[in-house]
Image (cartoon, rainbow, N blue to C red):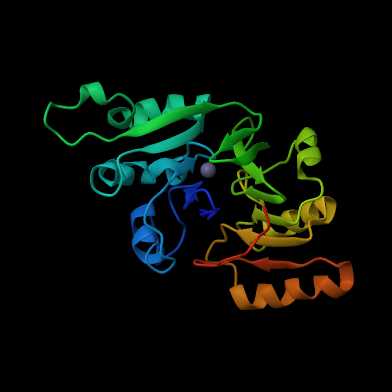
Amino acid sequence: MSLTIRYPSFNCLFYDLVKYSFRCRFFYHSALRWFPTFGLRTIDAVIITHSHADAIGGLDDLRDWTNNVQPSIPIYVAKRDFEVMKKTHYYLVDTSVIIPGAAVSELQFNIIQEESFIVHGLKFTPLPVWHGRGYRSLGFRFGNVCYISDVSEIPEETYTLLEDCDLLIMDALRPDRSSSTHFGLPKALEEVKKIRPRRTLFTGMMHLMDHEAVNEDLAKLMDSDGLDIQLSYDGLTVPVKL
Ligand SMILES: [Zn+2]
């Protein structure tokens, strides 16, 4: 459930460092599988959505990345998630604890607020959402693309930030119902009807989602509701204007 953006001034950028898939379970595997396919080599920035284990677990893979592939990587993260990283990945945050002579990672942590910030000339606007009761996760908008990977409820004030959206990439975990931390397909569809993006791709689906059958049903929404909605898949490339 991660996204890589290629933009003229930088090569790529990841939101979540773990990918849900039987073929690409973690960032390391995703990088091995997809970086050569798309001719990617370096990571110019990493933006963190939230600090659950399946969103930041791949951080450790960046440790050796800065020793072997490129000298450093900037990480953009909310303060509350940085506090979690200080515990889960303390050796990446405070490199003074590393034994002298050992390979030290070069990750530069930039704390973001719930307001727009610029990365390599591209503006990102956080889309604050609930991911379980009382737990904040961030989606991000860049240009007219909105990405919300983990959500159980969209607060009223975030809908304004979703207006005039060309492409919405959004969480839809189960085919039958929502869970306490994720939209299920029925709720995700309800939200798409409210947001009215020009195109929608669902992401983060579990194995109960029959890809072909669900896509066939979703395609019918074009005629009935004028909505272009499909399920995404590993390795999907979408050209967008930014
Ligand atoms: Zn999560």
